[in-house]
Length: 208
Image (cartoon, rainbow, N blue to C red; front, side, top):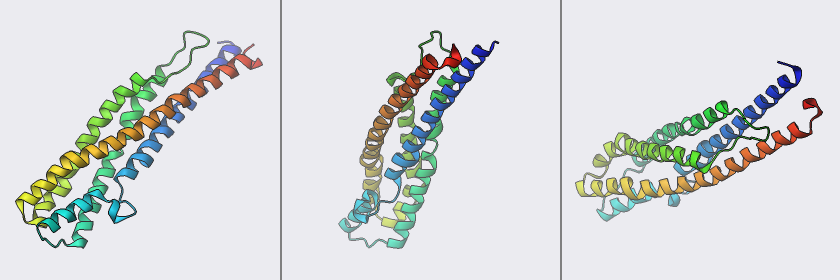
């Protein structure tokens, strides 16, 4: 391999690594920042839809809930969901990073592009995973405690229905919005990195 070809390969490797970093940072910000913020305990009790629902159902049946036990259950639930939400990082990163590894330009002006089609496929997997996380966390943490907390089968059933439908849908919809914003940022960021790569390649005397 001559010196110019060696520089070209180094430049391409640097470009691919920089693009990988954009992807990894974008996913980390999405999962650890945007999505986890929707799962963590809100700053105000009035913003906590699960807690509010549990209390409203208790009042409906004139049940006095043990507030300390309630907080423990909600804390365990959020930790369980949060722990599993982190799995989304690999689901999103792996196919995108693999695409970068496989990138081998056939034209001098070819750059890496992340398409909406690439992301739609990944987002379908993410949506499925979130549904499973919520379902499993509900069963493992919330629903095992709720019968004893209410001691009323109808109230327990109403709460379970709320968690499996209303809450799950609301959270999934909010996550979908966060993903949409980050997807657009990612597509733009990868294009900008490609343009920088081509600019350097075209204007650097190293490649003459």
